[in-house]
Amino acid sequence: MLTFAHQEHIQTYYSDTRNIHLKQPSLTQKISADVCIIGSGFLGLSTAIELAEKGKKVVVLEGARIGFGASGRNGGQAINGFEEGIDEYIEQVGFDKAKQLWDMSVEAINIIDERVKKYNIQCDWRKGYATLALNQRRLADLIAIEKASRQHFGYSQMELWDKAKLKQHLGSDIYCGALYDAQSGHLHPLNYCLGLAQAALNLGVEIYEHSPALDIHSSSTVKIETPQGIVTANNVVLAMNAYIDEKSNKKFGRKLARKILPVESFIITTEPLEQSVADSLINNGMSVCDNNILLDYYRLTADNRLLFGSDSSNNVDMVKKMRKNMLAVFPQLENVKIDYGWGGPIDMTLNASPHFGRIQPNIYFAQGFSGHGVALTGLAGRIIAEAIEGNDQRLSVFEQLKVPTIFGGKWVKRMALNIGIPYYRFLDKYR
Ligand SMILES: Cc1cc2nc3c(=O)[nH]c(=O)nc-3n(C[C@H](O)[C@H](O)[C@H](O)COP(=O)(O)OP(=O)(O)OC[C@H]3O[C@@H](n4cnc5c(N)ncnc54)[C@H](O)[C@@H]3O)c2cc1C
View 1 (spheres, protein in one colour):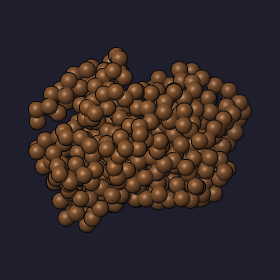
View 2 (cartoon, protein in one colour):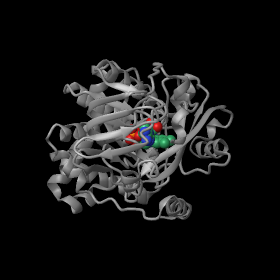
View 3 (cartoon, protein in one colour):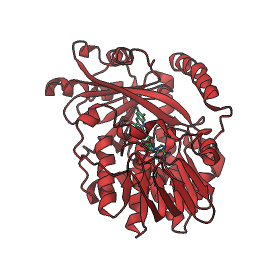
View 4 (cartoon, protein in one colour):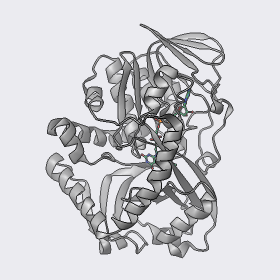
């Protein structure tokens, strides 16, 4: 049985400030559905909502608790575009499909707007996001992105800020400029996830917690076994992302797990700050992220805490290391207390391209959101639902993107991370 089967949410700022407390039963019988979704993060729940809105009977199996994975513990930044440069996509799939991909990434943010309004989800959703450059070379990358998205795709929500303009909104001296995007934003991820779950339940979706899918047997229908139950479904959606276990789903698990390099990311949250102190850090409600490979991302929460995350800090004494990272940006927070610290694996692919598709005609998946999962999961859910309904045009555009395979199992991944992370640190410092 999967090791997370009896686990509860880890303790985070989010778990302590959640505004919905859901407890769903485990599956203890044989049931059937049009679609069975495995995993109840943003992807699983978004797909469930899309399908239930179209009248499908949907069952969601969750190994631990709703939002136990990355969706309940991330930085909350919903960012349009992709981690991989758009030029790369133009080269891979041609201009028209690259434009379609860009437009879909913008739609991904609109989906959050729609869901928050339609289902009245209280998750502190707020617009405004800036990518920050630590040196002139990294600023040149931002200038290129702004130009490409405006000239190629007619996107007009981005604004380049020089150091002086950035200083009007951000109380840190270490950056030399920024690319501000008015459309991207941030939210409380666990409350968004639980709000999606509540919406799905209201639409008639059945969600079973502590019910890991142990094995999947497929023919024209698919049979999914849990420790005490069985679901038979016409279609299955694999929404386990970085938590996919190659051993428990030998046929499919290995194929998908080999595309994901789980990079640890850590987050700390300060005690609530006085309004004047909070305003001196960020005064326009935006969230921010630098454009290093191993990056820092941060924002203020609704109760004025600084929520600060970094990729690939050392697991050992993580809070101390993260505090050091935070003080490098905001030395004025020297005497501020850290109330929370936690971490989790980010679902990166080797080239940072999202990995969406089908393993066979009735088994769908989406994973490898590579730092854009808060927004892209909603889109993936929508286009998988479209494909299940018979229109796979948009899914097939994603299926054309190249995503390298990491051969060799867990130890090769560990080695890749051990070698890759110091290398990326070196690149971040000197390139
Ligand atoms: C610390 C951190 C910070 C991040 N910050 C950001 C950010 O600011 N912006 C951004 O866009 N992205 C961010 N991400 C990434 C983002 O959170 C993910 O891309 C996104 O949440 C993925 O959603 P998901 O539904 O695919 O997967 P998850 O939310 O991980 O859900 C997968 C679920 O599947 C369940 N599961 C696994 N195996 C089984 C099984 N066999 N049976 C039943 N259930 C199973 C798991 O328990 C889990 O609940 C961050 C991630 C982390 C860890």
